[in-house]
Image (cartoon, rainbow, N blue to C red):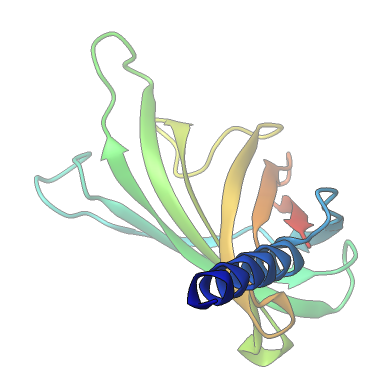
Length: 171
């Protein structure tokens, strides 16, 4: 009888565990996406020349700009960030360097934030990428209404020096 009892308890435990795993792991494989766009003023840039004078690894551009939910509309937030030179131009590519950027998009007086980070190629002679060019960076997270945010932001530089920031966040 003890053997029957042990097998029954093990069977019920296995059944309970499988039901629990199935219930806790059940989720939709179809993810929804929240998309929105903000419009960034031309950023104010400041170069911090670190290391050897002139272009060298570790040089940092710090920047900030106002954000608008519509072009020319009221200010709804701010982007602040930095771009660090991580790969200098080479003889093979004398006009191209790589910079790693971290961007903090803040809304609602800083209560709602989205953090994006990524590396992109830039023309060696300019602090920003070419007008008309887009760079896609991963969204690493957020706070407030963006808590747990993940997805990507596509930054497009406009001919007038402003940017269009298009977010695609997974829900």
